[in-house]
Length: 550
Image (cartoon, rainbow, N blue to C red):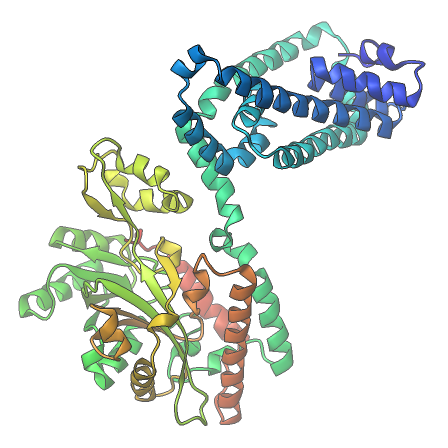
């Protein structure tokens, strides 16, 4: 495709407006060749760049709009014909319209990138009455990005592209390979857009539309900036490590779960799920667990979890000796064995108290919901996960956990719990549980907290049988206590706005720094930065050895 012929001869000698119009009309026949040729001509100085870009952009976009309008009006007219209605019942069209209203945007965007899919997608958008303004906006932005990308590429490497397009016998294989690739893309595009692949693509796009599923580096970037601001204000990067003098590093990183559970069992045994520490070699830990089982102090099912952990890493529900042996052989880390508390309900209670206050406060309460799959006797576990409106966003995590059951077809009505650890990172659903917060519960949590030496801020994870019991401040069992590094996890309620979530997190870190400063004024010294880094490096090394969580 040499730009000295074809497209160049079409626009040579014309007024700029006529040049743009000619390019636009050319895109009605074929979009890519006129666009790439115009970009190369503009890069070579043979066509005004703005004229070429505008002609291609408007031509492609107007063509897209015409396809939409033809399908919207012509398709609806055909739908009124009796013989068409026999094959396309109105109920099926209505279902398709509802589906396209939800999925239409990402289909329009992806069709711009997948050859052979634009025509059927745009016709479907018109026939299924996707709102015109929405169609025009999405396709307009997509065409703008597409056209701009070609012109930018030609501007940056126009000479190389021009050279590459010169006919040469030695390059015949290259053009042959390109032709095969284009044919293959067109051939496989429908399969790539089949139902299962559409669900995967929709899940990937949907994760970016729902901030609770954003990558940690993106979501926590503003929190990191707020942390840095607070560190400057208080003149200490590690001041949070002084927030809880009774916990290693204040509970920011590197703390022992068993150490806090041991203190809780000593001070509030009636509210704490009993736990024991297993350390040493795999054989030594297995032997220690066997002694606990034989003494009747614990029995299956039970919980095994790393003594040093975060975000539910390595937490597993163990149902038999073989699973326990496998777990203990998997990781060299010290492990906590804990009695299983079935609940079935779980909550996170975020508490704080300043050192000079007589009573503390419940800052936030998280209601945890454990997602379930319900079998239909037809679809496999993997298919059910991808079909679930929410589970698909964390499908990889669920399916890694359920690897052995991926292809199992659940009987109709059978339920399968997707996660055992009450942690958002593991796929648990979090909701704002403010309706469960009462003065009685706050008083009970404060009573438990004031018995713990050196504890002022953090989150209790508890299980309980009924909401009435929790509201009354009774009947719950503490699974673990997390210190300064814990979150007020109610922010992850999908009903919350991103602004609300950041407002809560910023306030939480203000409290952590302020309590750390209050303890520092009382003689508590924050950890040196080097020591905090050492704790973090040790934690990262251990995290890599943990088995997948339940």
